[in-house]
Length: 109
Image (tube, rainbow, N blue to C red; front, side):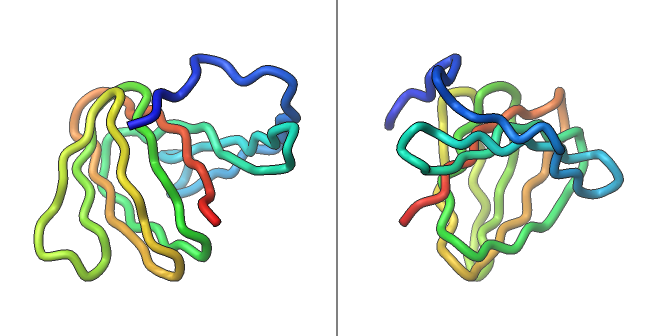
C-alpha cells in the first residue's frame, strides 16, 4: 500500500469545486507536474453512489467508510491509510456514518 503524501508540491489546483449530492461530497482537481490528475475531497455522513469512467484508486486520508463496488457480493470497510480500487466503467456506493471522510482519488490508466 502506498502512502499518500500530506501535501502535493508543484501542482495546479482547479479552484472550481466538484460538488455532488447538494454539497455532501466536495472535491477539487489537482494536476500533477507529469500531467496526471487526482481529486482531493471530503464526504459528509450519508450514503452515495458514484459511476466511474476511468479506473480509480480511492485513498482514505481521514475518517471511515463502507464501500460496495458494483457487482460485488460484500462491502468493505476502509479507514485512514487504506484504499480501494474501482474498475473503469463501473461504480460504487460509499457510506460514511461517523466523522467526515477525507480522500484522494487517483485516476488509473
